[in-house]
Image (cartoon, rainbow, N blue to C red; front, side, top):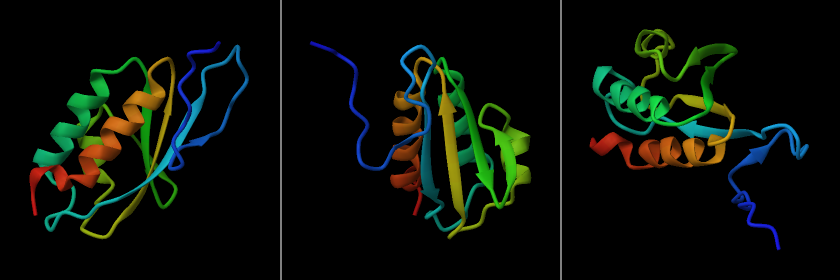
Length: 110
C-alpha cells in the first residue's frame, strides 16, 4: 500500500513521473486590504525557506523566488492580484498548501 499523499482538488500536479519530484501549481489571490507589503511578504519568505522545495510566485508572466523578499515586493501585488505559485522538490505539496493557507488567512490582516 502506497503512503504517497494524494493532491487535493486545488493542486495541479505537472509532473507525476515517479522518479522525478512533482511540480505543484496553485492559483492564489491577494485578498488582504493592503496587498503584499513588507509584513506579508516576510511571512511568505520565512515559510518558503522552511521547506525543501523550489518555490516561485508568478504574476502576469513575471517570476519571483518565494525566498526573495525584494523580488516578491517588485511584483507589485495590491488587493485582488492573481498569483500562480509553483513548487517543486521533496516538500513541494506541503509548501504549496502552507503558503496557500497563509494567503487564505489574509496574512492575519483584514
